[in-house]
Amino acid sequence: MNADKTQERQDFERRVHSEMLDSFDEELEMEIDDERMDALVSEVTSPRDRAMDLDRSFYFKELFRLQGELVKLQDWVVDKKLKVVVLFEGRDAAGKGGVIKRITQRLNPRVCRVAALPAPSERERSQWYFQRYVTHLPAGGEIVLFDRSWYNRAGVEKVMGFCNDEDYEEFFRTVPEFEKMLIRSGIILIKYWFSITDEEQHLRFQMRIHDPLKQWKLSPMDMESRRRWELYTRAKEIMLARTHIPEAPWRIVEAVDKKKARLNCIHHFLTQVPYDGIEREPVVLPERVHNPDYIRHPVPEELFIPAVY
Image (cartoon, rainbow, N blue to C red; front, side, top):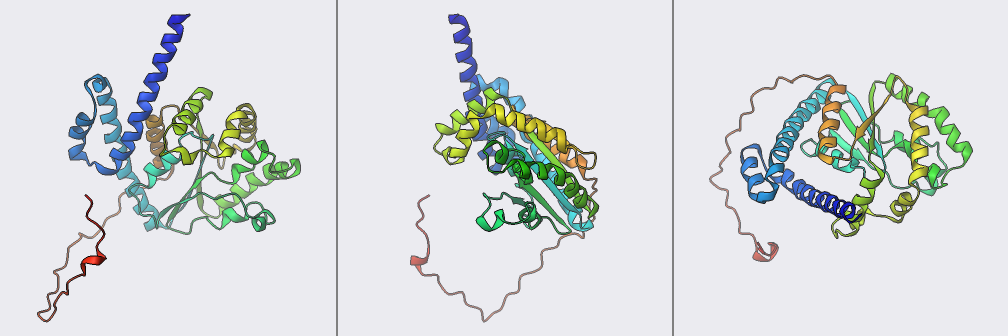
């Protein structure tokens, strides 16, 4: 019995350590480039982490490679005036935001934007349910990533009692036709469900509780969703069964391992929009014009922020 508890404790400590490294990796991803990566990864890991170095090094290299492909995809979308919509659904702390951040990290925010809608206002609740989502759909040459979507009605609204049974059933009658209509209009629609285990969500919630930088991610609604795990499971199963249509199928992302989930999701996304490289004219920096009568005036010291660093 004691041996089992010791093993459980060791497993928990290993997962917490891995979670801490992952948080650090998020910062590294924003700063490092290919040439400096290997040296930096070696510097920030201790000898006992050496067994993880290869995996982390591969993750960085593959992430940067996939992000390079995303830039090519972005250029293709703009050139061909494509309209792309990607829905990211899943439980709280399933990793949707982490994948979205990696997709948008190197892209032009005017081309690829995120729609993360708050709870509907009183006015929006009186509208056609899909109306507030329609306003965020892309024009030609745009990609929109929905961080949660119209499927809120099949999940949180159903579980938390924010809609009645009639509204719930009407959603399932309407959503297949709504999505078929989007596709007929020329929109490329991709739907992802991020799947994590009960134990993994518990761990991630615990990490957020003890991390001052991530506590803001935990809302009272998140706490209640944790308590109603089984109801969310039932709602998810019904949603997938009733809205998995040939024109807009669901794709499930195994998300217990965050890094694998990010790479797998981005890789799959790239396969859903056939693209090629765009030929561009070489960029030539023009000579700067120098006017002999131009005099640069000094900037007053009080306009500068303090040079703390």
